[in-house]
Length: 175
Image 1 (cartoon, rainbow, N blue to C red):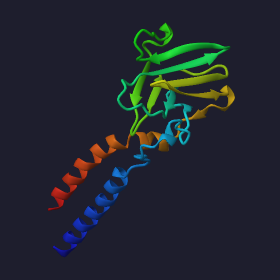
Image 2: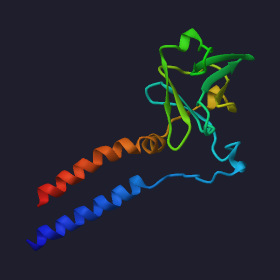
Image 3: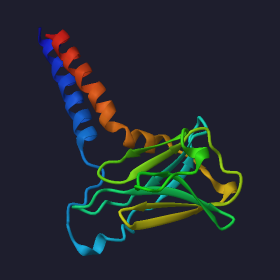
């Protein structure tokens, strides 16, 4: 019986530490000062996923009390092409209408995924969120693969929802 209690205590400790790590915030800026309007502390990123999807992250924070409008575009040869937008009256390029989607990031920002898309020449990607804008020049020869850790950090809420019931079931089985 004492061995069973020791195992139960160890399992509960491991699950408590795991959940604490997963639930802790990675970055939180709750200060509402005027110095963070430019969002210069976070950079826009572009990377190629293993399945050839191109991922563009836009770390801009929407303005409070505004309808959040966002737009992703790219520029090649001085021609801007809208990839995805929710701005009323603006349409994306027809070649991107059915192979792109946007997800909102926590605590703020947006992630554009362009399915089965690779860049073939140097490209500047731009994102606009409620009248704020960022851009990033991507050299076709230096396009980075998306790292596994960034995928993990962006999906940790889903992992948490899977791990929590598993921990409860293991604890109940030990009783």
